[in-house]
Length: 57
Image (cartoon, rainbow, N blue to C red; front, side, top):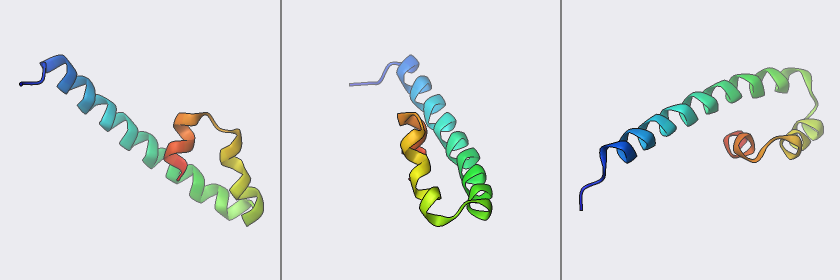
């Protein structure tokens, strides 16, 4: 069964968005690692929204 074009496009756009978000979060995470001790760095994801927390891992 073929996938409707709208679903394919939305899926591709969402995947691209998540890749961009993960890259941006990685940049923020590496900056935080330089300024925050390890214990505090591990507690940061608990205060983030669920979507961002998924990228954090």
